[in-house]
Image (cartoon, rainbow, N blue to C red):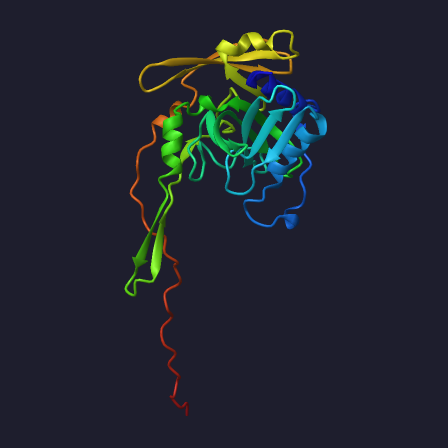
Length: 287
């Protein structure tokens, strides 16, 4: 089974209960989480796969480890990774993040390294993005996409993994340390300004693999052209399970991200009110 076949099965299972344009979600209470890295949304995604796709082995990587979930076909032994990214919607159903998302200290990529039987292996990686409703009970939008859609440069991904450094002997007593930890901001497909993904539940793969979607209960929704900084063009196809009136053609889908410019950083200081005038008792005596 190819990585496309695995992704297709996952997409069909996740969207199986699609009703009225929304996907129902049941998350365990936040009170049961141990750390901020213990995300109930990641757990929900993995649980759905384990319950409905017994032909796959599903492994949760654990906190601060990428990819979040590893899926292996029991028969063919094909392996893919899935990074799970949640965006919270406000009361009006709009995303809370805007143009980009934080990807912590890991640069997005369509390939990642894991260990299989103690040996380092490079595996295909997909990203699952979900825009979670204000009530945390459904997904307004979601997409399972080839990680290359965001970044195909594996060497850049590896470079980012080893940029975090620590310096010791810091401070006037030499007892402190400084941790240099890069934070990467890459596009947010759940931004409601992006019509291609807004209020849709989709699968995005490279055009060259589209033939593997034949005889599948999905419909083409968009053809998306991605042009890199060297003018190389990579074409993708977006699929949905709902009827489509017309296939759209999209160019430069994240163009707004390119218009950003650096801004000078400034410290945010706590502000309190001006001190009142000192109290002066009135010692005058009225006659």
